[in-house]
Image (tube, rainbow, N blue to C red; front, side, top):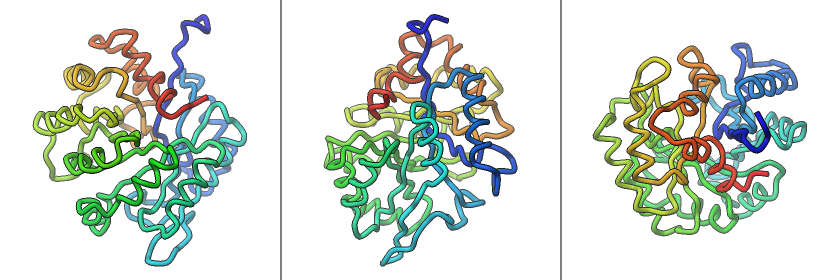
Length: 294
């Protein structure tokens, strides 16, 4: 395919250090090489690494975290740093910052200046204390610091999307992207389906909010590849938000055994309800623009 016609696909969420079944203790350079080969095979230009080193990604302590006063943690991402150093045009980094970090402004500034760091991420629903703070506006310093640093924010709210609205209004200069379609995790007893989709679509009025299409067949509308059950939600979300406010991610390590990296790509590439222009925007153009990727 001529360069001018080739899609520049950006996978905006991969826990790349977990790429193999035996990832704990694996040679990082071997994992990085395996990732490059797989990306080349399925046509992915760049992947954003969200490094998670805890054996149980939701419940175990992160061995790369340093304790700070007040119970906060300072997260490091040595695997992602290594991948970016070796392949700066193929990888970038989503950096986590603890909302309780006493030097949160300095930390955001450091990350903004760090090679490869293009966004930060929050997941307040993973701990009850974090969630209570999020609902009451306790994450204001986090949002303010990210906005001042010019560091886009990914937010995993596990379906509780209404709570992001006050932050969108208070920090209109911050680019915010809802992870996983704005839907709850599949194992949660929570609102989902049509009722949740309507709640997410209602947020389209906020121009600084974007949506990450990630693991839709697991979170939104279950079904086998080619996931035609997703076509209706896809079309409705494009119509509400516009094609320029949607980014794509595979989260492939957390979908192991459910779909392949190629199927995650071609679910979009072969989607009958999206135009070629919309596919190009969702698969890469939007991420490159919003995150200022090279």
